Length: 409
Image (cartoon, rainbow, N blue to C red; front, side, top):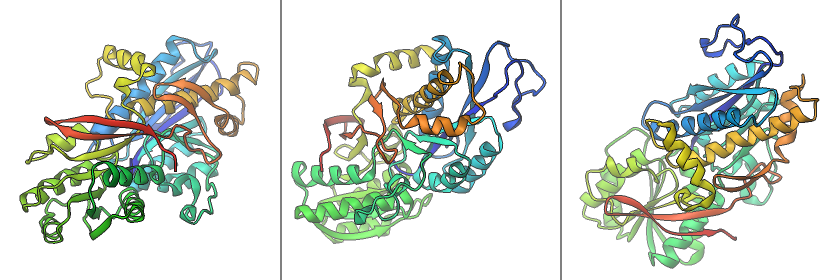
């Protein structure tokens, strides 16, 4: 989805003593519980507070579950995993500050996240300079992995340290336009975005594909994140005679926009990307959302045989918050790093090597395993090879899946 959030691996390369000071949460004189193992800490940087915390908490909990599972099964002999969480509040400056702290800790081996594409942009350079792997469970902006000229078919991977388990907006935006035009039979759409990296990029890709198919974009507008009065935009939607709205942005603004469009007298559906697909989009609305539409990456994990154990284990763990839209992708992101660490350790006589960061980044390109969300692997850009997407609609006050398919351009 979107602008999205982050996770992190911290390894201590000596056995017998834990030497971690980040976040001030550990005593650097305290011996390890298991003196025969090296500790590798997987941290989480996500919006753990604020309007997107429902997604951030699901990311954090799912990584925590991956860590506990790896320890329980002794997935990497000689290594004990721990988790450390960081809150970026979906703010790029906070994400960058967290990234610098992580880079400064020489034990950190990898990062999962962030949630927001805009936050990722602020972090990528710091991680790349330090050879520090990051895997996002939610970023969808194409430029993060394919460079700024991706739309001109001049794809160039900016950072070899960047990977993601979520598919890109190139796929999601086109998929949404094809569904709205071909299946929902909407021909006149009003396109709105929140001026952020994720939202503006997704809206632009959608609009281009919708017009290519023969549809008409009857108007465009922009809203500002954290504002609540979108009545002027709603009035424009009504006056232009749109039969649908496409919103590139997050669910807090998307839900309010959809409400105000209906209050303006336009009884039409609002559609958006994975950043709208959350129960909070519905619960925060004053008007009925029935008929509104969202696309999201992958298939509903509740319907995947590969996700049954994850769901059961998550419920058994008793987490207060649901795994939400990115739980399965977060677990797979963390497990990818765990598998890369496993390969590096196995190749070094079951010890974490001195150049572990570079070795983990190199091993990531070869990672492949059956994950929660399906087969997990990465292409030459660090993008997931899983191109499945799903269309959801609100029905009876709940998101209901309409169809899933593998996108082919």
